[in-house]
Length: 319
Image (cartoon, rainbow, N blue to C red):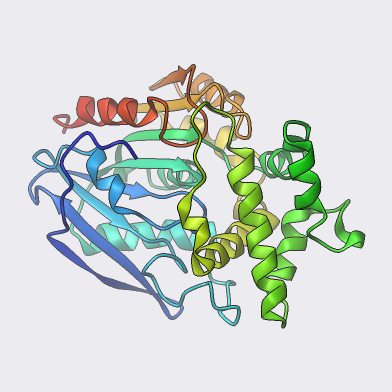
């Protein structure tokens, strides 16, 4: 991420017991008396990296970062194929956010989310609107099966050779079916070589379908076999289950966000997550402002990070 503010270190951190044998890593940075804000990372499974801290003015914000269940520094870690994912769902993550809010003594906070984190942030805000002061979301998604189908199949029209390799990474009998489901099964195969190759193929495709804006660089985290495994395992787990959301719920229930100011930032070159999703959301949520960035794709590059920082600056003194 582009850094607007100087890097800061946490002034407090810990592991929160959220039940089900799960410990969630959290940290707080910035001004302990500042405006509370929580960061919801993407993936699912990417973890919360230090770059998020530089999006906020540390003099005005009390930033809360955490690693969602099963990833980053949270335990147990989903890279272990024996770790059960049955208690890793969207409902569980929403409950974890509320537990963390109560644990830190926060009444209301701004929610910053990207990609999967934007869908999670919308679902959380719709469930607990009284706890959300504002929403700043970029690379906006809604967690629908249609979006998963678009990424895992339709983007093959943009990257045909790369998609063919991705499709051929699963057994021939599974190639016309749900590719997320097929990869999820491979990622729990008894043979570690099969699991590793499935994670590698999944992450190669993840790095490909977002490569639509000038200057795109491969994500170096995919070079780490542990990161590849946890990321692939959690993404496929969520996608094979429709993100554990009733289809269309995030857009259908946008009216529940009435009265919550929001900024939706999306790249016009974000072809794998088309801009009709944030556009439809903005039509149903009058308190949201949609900004489409002509040169940006999926993620924080090509001016996106700067617009995120500007949106956070605008909300920093609002109580």
